[in-house]
Length: 586
Image 1: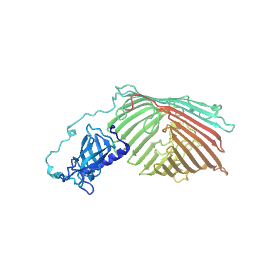
Image 2: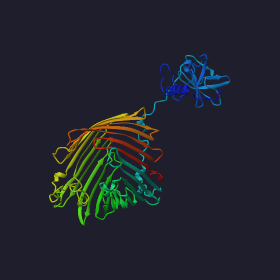
Image 3: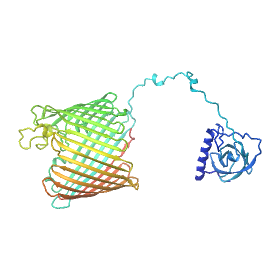
Image 4: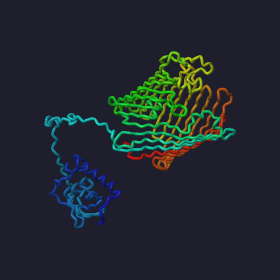
């Protein structure tokens, strides 16, 4: 005899027989099938006195200490029947119309073995039904309502994570290089490179103390670099953040140093920020300090900024609302300069997003921009709706330039609505107003997506558009499991240039998505408003992105541009390594 085993064909038969037995065990008597009682075992036939006969049975499956035999009680084999395999005697424990089951115990038989069973042909199986269950109403009032333990508990609030017992250092090391190589003389090649390091350290497991640093060393290379404009905005060292902080983001939190963000709508500040939670979900913060030089980021004492911020978040709500209110001012040349208040609100209900913001500014009555004393300087509405496969996205905004005496000291005349020729005559208010609108409709399916839309940019109210843009695109994903393709078309018209272009791309994800390669081509037909003849521009290139090991990303992009304005090769390469030293994320 061979050791019991489970074959692939037998597994199918086993499932069929198991389902048949389960059906028999829980169903009333039906035609062509005599079910066993609710205990799962069939009773002996009523015609026990009838003569028995020998029926040949065959083992079709062995599993779980049981052997499954064929045939069943259609051949007269019922629970309690004796089956003989040579000297081995086994008893049928359950049977249905086609199959019978015996317990093996210490016996050893194999699939395909044949034996003989005592059968009573034509005998019917007796089904004993259990008594009907008691009605549920008869149990009412038998058990008193239990008091929930939580009603009597008053646990003390303990903020999670303040002493997390972990020490963590998160590092990001990156290298970026780029070059523009003219293919036609006499233009000169210009190249740039940057080495950047970002560090977030939480060195102590007993205190919520953290340190942040973000600094880069960069260089620009060109033979005529000194003759090119913008040399002040190309520093060798640029520090974006260098600060120390104590506390938690959703509780008390204090930070000092070069802060990456002073508030939700304000960027770098050399100073301090202190925040505290008033009630769950609501946090109040105050900040103040010096504003770095906007050209190269070096520390400066020319301007300072101060303000307060109220933040609200409720991640437990199904709408996940967020809101921030920032009131801030600045001082330049010893006098109050900017005075602004900004409100932003967003909600994220299921399948949708709605966000809006508004900003108001105060100006002196004799300001050089011709602005009113209280003026709406920015407002926007951003919405998306994604029911199932449909995508609807829109963005509306109006804004005026950021106008301050400090910012005007760095910009050419006219950038903040100063007059270009006569500096004694202020601008009119409408000269600075801009508005834009964008709408996109799309369809996204499992293997393809398509969309179309347009945008418009208008200067002031009731003016002709500065620019009109229309676009459409189609993407096909996972062709042959690794390939993808896309085709997009764009047409735009503006005061300076009219353009119609198409862009096609074919890409592939290889090596379990650790390597991605793509090639693209974009022809464009353009015409300057001041010229009569249009011209054709071609751009062709490739992208390679790879993740050779964990936490390491490498990318290379190269494009060749051929057109009437310039023929050039554009190359960009990036390497980013982001290890986590210490414990994992909290």
